[in-house]
Amino acid sequence: MPVRVAIIGAGVSGVVLANYLTRAQAEVHWQSARPAVEGLLSVTIFERRPTPAGPDGGALLIQGEGLTILDELGVGAELRAASSGKLPQDQLFVMRDALLELLLGCLAAQPNPSEVKTNTEVACLQETSDGVLLEHRPLLTCQGGRWVRNHNPHLESELFDIVIGADGNAPSSQVAKSIMGDELARAESVSLLVLQALVPCETPCEPYQEYLQGAGRVSGKFEISPVVGLAPGSLGTGSAATLQQWEACTVTVPSQDPMRNFPRPERWAENIMSHTKSIAEGTVRLAANSIVESAQRGTIGRLHAWVPFHKNDLGRWRSSSGRLVVLGDAAHLMPPTLGWGASCAMGDAKRLAICLTEGLSQPLLQCSGSSLAANLLADLDDFAESRRGVVAPIMLASVNESMKLSGAAPAVAT
Image (cartoon, rainbow, N blue to C red; front, side, top):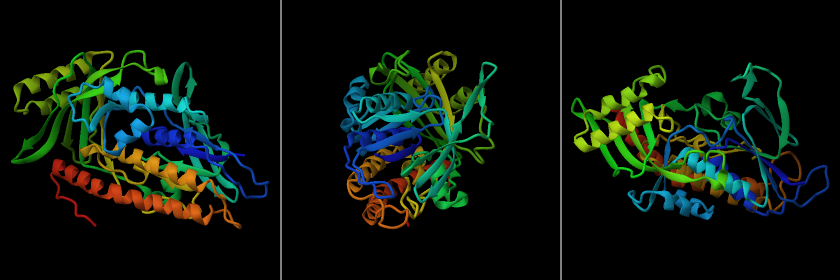
């Protein structure tokens, strides 16, 4: 029987992890009451969204190790070919749905298949002597031809050997809460509001960035960027998706109590344009307003807004048994102010996949008890420490940038 791995969250880090795991041909020795067997990893992804790739979400900046990972998974060249070439060579700005569409297509083509369960909410995780009992139910249900939140308390149960939390882009991850408890796992909102307008285009404008000024100090940031996105009709086509050029106008501005003061969607375009009035360069200001107006009235363009959340480090990235593990935003939720969140999460995914596929080629369980074998626990700890070394300075710089934009004092390294 293969080792059963559940990944909660079909975002970028979860799908990258699944790609690396399903590529590996690990020999697994299962020690329990059942006979020892050899086999492959069995990977199941649980995703709350009805469609993992969108069509929602904004644009992601991919840089550093993230670019290397896209090349290793076979999608980097396609994204570069579709880009405008106006960004530095060590950066790619790509729509979330376009990136996930390609990564999911890559996953579907892997020789060792995985399962993606969409519209599935994980309600409870319970570690047992045999593994982790994962209870789930549909997030939405169809009533009278409309999709509504499911309030049926009935839960389905499945048993997994290891459950990995890639579900951290929220106040708290289900896996993180199971490891640390609700209070210690909770992330806090940053006093910022991010608004973004995105539209397809034939020739994107030149990238531009300017800090907004108010009362003699920085009061936000304005950016225009060329973006790689999906062409119409490409959602759901996987590796056959057609890419095209988009452009994005993004403003990041201070907001006191941002969750309470979050603007209604019909105000997003107006809110963006209220901040573009101060842009010094007239042609850039006109280009920004054109993007926003096109996104507001078009059927393909998109307006997007969100409040960033932040948590420096979860503290522990695995449960004491090693059967629950976190990565990416579930382990270290950084503000998006420098655009490193996605790339760091992808780096976590690659490093964790190496740890698991190498460790699982040896006995999985300790001779007695339900914990993973000591060598695998040590490998998981090495994974966490090595990734902390990469993430910590980027986290500090991102937090300092968010404080600069919100008018707060800079953070101090610890």
